[in-house]
Image (cartoon, rainbow, N blue to C red):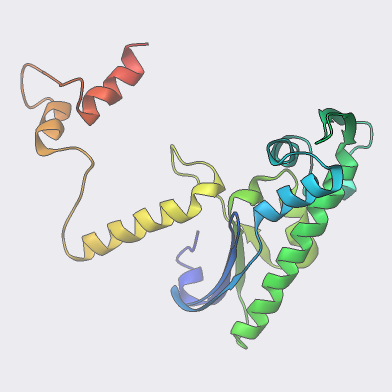
Length: 222
């Protein structure tokens, strides 16, 4: 997410997690300060559940599949029927659900904006917003409402193309970079499995219980 240009400037990273939002300041690619806001994507689920008196599972479904992050482009005539906690059928339209989502997202982003101003007095050259909730449709619109020069940082790695994996992917990349500095490498496969995969042995005999065996089984047995 932080490219070569960003590594020479001062910027901020906002990671909206499930229960907490982390605001970090980077100077020349090095983190210099950080603050945690006790609010995240789960709060949106609670808001939807509270307003419509529905369980959290349905609230989560509405957030991820019906509501938009920007209420201004939501439709009143698009709706879903669910049961509330009393067992009654209720209709929830996209605009009403989106109002709830937009309100909470704006609150989180404005709190993050305030923290950035508290954490540094230097000019901010870039702001990156990421985290699972940024996958909400039209999230970029809300970011533009709150910030003038912020972008949504997307996880693009194969097998992890969802921003909810941003922390895990970041930790793996950091660990890999530290190993490379020590001229070391790592792999989830044993040396024997690597040799089998590379075709060094003429006859490939892969145990079904090994990681490699399970990998081949997943793709080729079905």
